[in-house]
Image 1: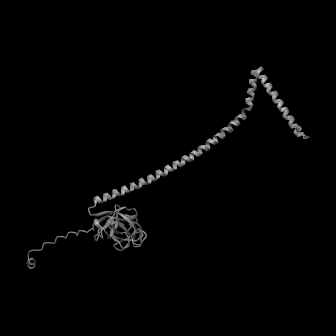
Image 2 (image 1 turned 180 degrees about the vertical axis):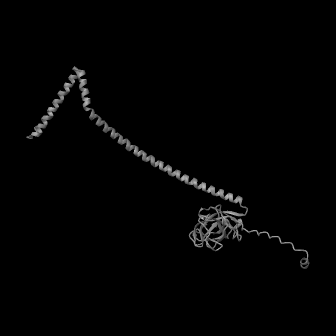
Image 3 (image 1 turned 60 degrees about the horizontal axis):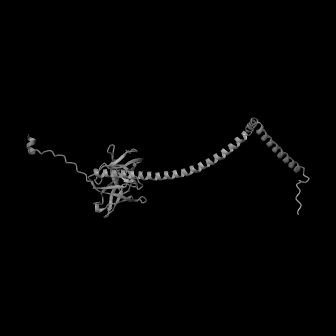
Length: 302
């Protein structure tokens, strides 16, 4: 049988003192416990006083432990609330994106309805209409300014007929097929439109600049009469375009005229109306003075 290991700590005094102190503390704790038990049995009132003193002594420690527990619990609640807030924010963001898409769609439909109302009013109030169609495409990248209309000869569309929208003059029909027609826009360099200033009737003519704008020049040479903001309308001179159709508004002046922005932009125009060619009515002739019934000699003699 093996010899049991020795419980002696060896020759280390530090270890021996440690073991001795442990025994002393154990015995002291046991004696203290027995003393407290005896006091609780013999003198409950005194034991209650001792218990109160112990509570007072340990209160700061208990408060510190409780504060730490609450801090840990609060941190957990804060983290949980942060996670929940992130999830709710993501859900709200998805709802906002969905509502924004619906709002954009509603505004688009509202603008379309407004354009249809404008076109309906234009069709109802214009007796010289031929057909109404949709602008299918435009040649924005070419030096020529052309557009395609979704109506053609089957609807009575012919070359040379003017085309307008609710906002103003678009151009004239260059050529037409059975179902479509090509519009020569007023911004094309080959399209010359007789115009006048709406405020005082100053005659001028408009020529396309092939960059989305038109050049305005006065018929009478001399000092530049235009000002920024002037509104130009068709004059009706020479026929083709009926008078008083809005054409453009002056943006800036040039040495011999002005640059103006057309009211009817193809990019913003969904529908356009083809009109009959305007034929100006000749003014009535002044009545001739009645000739005398008497011969010239007799009238002189008298």
